[in-house]
Image (cartoon, rainbow, N blue to C red):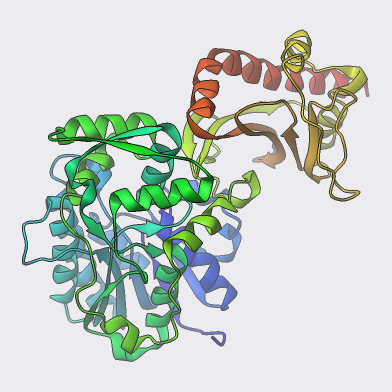
Length: 474
């Protein structure tokens, strides 16, 4: 795609699909304006400096008029499921506001990603809302291309993360009988392929396209296929009736999907979600579909701290503990009264003969339970200390240090430190990552959580303290 002077607006810029779409548009040298209610959450994205930022909300028409000025094509990637009761009415109101503002601003094309379901059947409010949102956008005068997708298979997709975490956690998976309903999963890569193709292909304007991958399967079969890729054996305990609120609570507790979103999604799983009209393959023949197993294997290649979206980093200084893209994450940051190079010097000299600056005895005790021999693939990856507890995974002098744990555990662990300057002040961030393998991995993380909190909190403070002392000695 040649470089274009046409301005493209991405709504829902902090969301999952936008985070995958924007880098592809940048690669094609498109001009982009990212629209978000909380734009500060975008600061940690690698592409932040390459796009325009517009703060606003589809529920605030004035902010839409400002954001849409000069825009040729707008991607509508917004949903309100997390806002709780009444979200369906808010979705339609937001779509009406957007359609009016786009018409007033002279936008030429709207591309919308909705949900895949048969509108003639009894479907959940979430799916009905997704379909009605598309219909509301089409009531305006701006041409709309609508794509309807079901399960999106890719690291970070809420539907895929539900499958991932529940299959990882339960050797015997409790599930309602509608887990045997059919779906047609589509890979994240193919969703992005369609969204990009619609940008240039005018034949798709004013049309609705149902998109799915090459396979139709039950939700149960998808979980079994994920288990097979991971090398697990999984069975199911089918329950005749499970209240939606109870399932949503369980999903919110065990997966990265918040309970409010899970409540809406669970209802959507109670009906089939398959492609009935395959016009997309005719209008967009260049999209080569990927099967679920391939998409799963691709998602598993993202099980590395440098390959996931750091959505928790907003520069607010808060402690963040979350589940994200297959990881358990503990993130902390604080201001340090020392130069960045001084802080980084402290980081580089931890471990080995110097010991750890906090709870060194506990590190030694933990090492007695087993240490794996580090895999050294190049001169850039070398043992970090004589005890081989960690080795350097990645290093950017005076900016970033990522260590890969060699402690034996049912999963993989990393600790990352970043040093930067914000508003004239040195900021130190520390992020611990653990990707569990099976039930043992979940138990390991949760049972050791009090220890993790104690050590990670103390370690960050000790690094900051030693940095200040070192700075004062200079």
